[in-house]
Image (cartoon, rainbow, N blue to C red):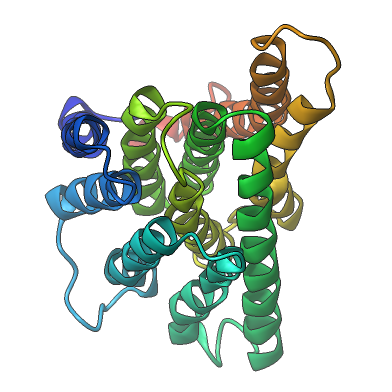
Length: 285
């Protein structure tokens, strides 16, 4: 269960920091403000739990330090709007690689580590390419809201897979995305740069959630969650002239898939934490 203190640190604080940056960015019409809002909010929530040393003792804590260059990539993507800028999403690969490197060679083979990193790089680039299409055809607000839903679902799954700290950091990332979804608008230029920040964080969260805890996030859940943001493209296929139908269809598709993964994981974790009434030694555990 999430305590009140943890909720203040990883939900309220990131939300307020991201909201402040996003509000100023919308007022000043700075294209780089939205990715900065996500990165700043995530780092604020992480730091309130504890700033890890460099290099970190726990490999999953690389996510804090890697969020800094990833946010810088988002700023560059927003400022330049390069046609091939979606390739920056391949940063998800190096993020996963650094997080998994401390596990080598005892808990993970070199082949598995490299293969996972390459798969994350391909997924990251593909999702950032899809983000451009989603922004153009469904809208920037739908794009960021969909990323927020998937990040929140991934946080719940990681939290329920015996990596409590990873779940908390995922909640911080989701909380940072929420106000950005509220402040971004149709006329906001290059909102797809938010995905350049969010997707590598999502990849790092899931990679750590799979390999570090026991039993960890299953491969099925990892794959479904990493590709879930692409389901926003479903909204572009919906016919009709009513503009609100496409965003609703896109978010509904993402929400249904994410909830179908996160809800059973949370219920199973809750059930596992409850004492067995038939166990005579339950009171002593």
